[in-house]
Length: 259
Image 1 (cartoon, rainbow, N blue to C red):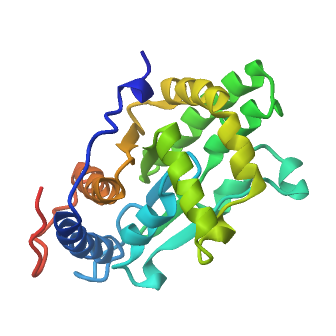
Image 2 (image 1 turned 180 degrees about the horizontal axis):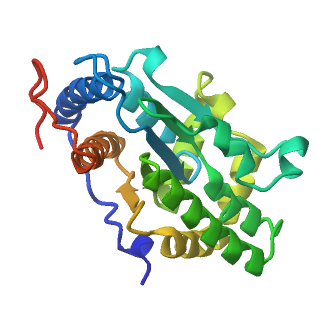
């Protein structure tokens, strides 16, 4: 059984507790970000941080990213939305277009979708054959291994929702004039391809869940739970990696982050 099939979608959190834990986590993230940028002690910058998000349409990636970055100075984080490759990008290796956005030392980048479109969208749409998909998975693992070996922390999230919850969110967007723009004909079409996406997703997770960069699978049926889970997972993974690099993490200043 794939890890995807083991996600417990019943996990939930009350709004009040969620908001309290989000605020606390944002304070801790700000502290870690200033530390790694070399702006607290005046020391050299720490390892770069790359956080990437994948998930079904309407799974809450945008909301999770907003909470993740809300407490940070815009100069200290870059959010990169990833769309279909351009004609120029198609003329290169599929990973080529991502290289300019990989964070250097002391930097932080968030990908709203990522190179995993190769194993999901392109496979489902039959733009690549199974052999190419398998080879691409191996190349992604090697690319992520190289990033981690060079000092970058790579955190990968899949936000998971049920087919029923996705339909509810689609209908809510369609009825809201301020959110209607988020819903496209492709979203409805992709929803009909969910079984094929699940097959591709299971293979992608199984093939690319390696010790250099494990997949963090988040139950996103309840947005309050998912947003807290993302923030606290980033803090846990990032803190562990900084300590692995020999960086001593002082207590945060004036925050009450709960582990």
